[in-house]
Image (tube, rainbow, N blue to C red; front, side, top):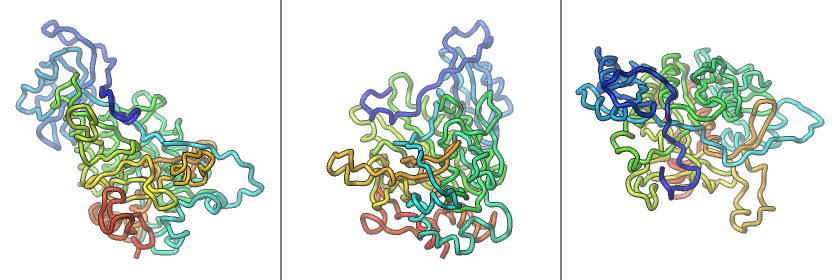
Length: 448
């Protein structure tokens, strides 16, 4: 993989499958690998897709007919070149692994409280929720808590590590959970990331989310090892849309390098195309899709520059123009030091948290202020996190309360996106800029 890209940023890695099968003596035997085959039809599979794959030395291990794609396992080293001879195939390539957008920093809240009164942690620590809701003013507005105008639950799907649905601040707003992790049926969070995200959206207890009466649903795609195949994430997005959720939050992502010497550019495109098809499927089915910008602290608008000294182009994924892409701001209304940015790549900015700007300016770590990180729920308690993973769910929560104001299945995703953008507080350069997009999200202005 790329040698000179920022360490830890290149999170989309190539996966090797473990399926052992008989592919026939006609094909040279190699190492088992998992591939994505994307057919020309965006919403169906050709009638002979199984035969096409088999004749190329592969076996279909997962079919996504509504996305016109399949996952294939093969030990034929010539599988890609052979399957792409089919006139029905648009792209084929090695399947990538995507990871949760790992927090830049985490600190567990371990203080002893004399009282655990409702909202006490919100009152003390949650500057981020206060910033978006104008100190809770939006909760007094129609739809502001997430209670729908037509009395139907507004559901935000959390495509992530799962959710601790037993957490006292979440359990009353937990709708359901599904797992897309091979071999794991439970949607229970074993990491903490998804639970932190869920609390930022719909926490209602010691901490509060943007919409304390919204519902959250766990679409677990990450297992204990952390990674998820693109096909599993695509399946989760497709299923969420079929389940008629209202919003999807994806605090996840990776970087696709289109000059990897191990693979031709065309062999990388299939994975990206499947991801984008899944996003488009959800949006076409009325789902507002929100994603994090990434924590590499780089300009993602220029694929060439993102590759650094390496040749070719590097793209942030997912980066669909139709979803809402969120950069991370700090308590001091600054772009956080870790947040990705880029003209045409950022739609809005939302609180993601940092340690304040004083320590950055001086290098004095004693000036790092933990309370400027974002506090939310984690399994068994509460923790401070920082990252664009924390910014995206604030925006997903805002999308949820906007939908609640008008009622379920009334607004289109593009209308929700426009309301979020047009009501944002202008930061940095006048008008649109690559750091904050159209500005900082504002629930009061959006609900007006």
